Image (cartoon, rainbow, N blue to C red):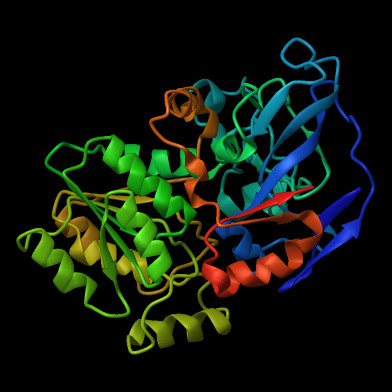
Length: 391
């Protein structure tokens, strides 16, 4: 089969690889009908996430048709079922799964001993990501093996296009969880840093959850226009001061809730000293992440407020102003998304036409075009916001 394969920094190729097979009774095999390139895939592309190996199949946003089912999953799935595959692999039986904390499942990470040494406790296995999260083959491929498939799936109805349902596996529940973590009240201002696909979903989720106003912060006009169309007030940080503008919009109080939808590769104006410091630290392996957005959120957030962080971070951040967090009484909520905790509700929203997540799609192409589209997505060329690939 064809698959997009990681060969090193900025080197992803469309290769012929071995078809997946049932390895455990709880497995299923799907024929992938649609998959997508995610912003967090760029962290792998730039080699900022540790423990990638040449030959790893990438991709963690995918859906398709079940073509084979192991005996242990036969009660939940059958051949021909149409499913979205969440990026988090979970057993459904451990203590964390029973609590609904699927992204920290205690059983699905097959490199658990390795991850325990790095993180203290391993997280769940993730598709198409690093060997710290199990080293599972990803879904930017023609076929995918789904472990724990009796639990790790989202059944979806026929008659709704792939592009509308695909993002139930990651960016829609990720944006929703980011907003839910904010405990949004009707009097709240919610500021969202980053208007990529997750930021766009967080913006619309905050509006659906009843925020008084939502502010979108980015530098790309097409992203800011999309955010504004969704009901947000845009701030272009390349043209104006984020801090001054936020103070203007909140009568000097600052936003009650702040969402970091950027993560490890935050970009600021090259006039800002953080840009030089963070990039030098990262290049010299003194810090794994660029935390400018985190610093700015901590500084502007109203005392007693909440910082929600769906953006992916890989390890160590430099000059993290924890004294501000403590003295302002800020609450930080973060984590990989517990996808299936939210998907029943989100699927109903789609069916009731409260939201159509396909609004983020700007590019659709064949899987073979994936390597070129990684570069286009990275460089933000051709107004690229979200790429869907058709295996």
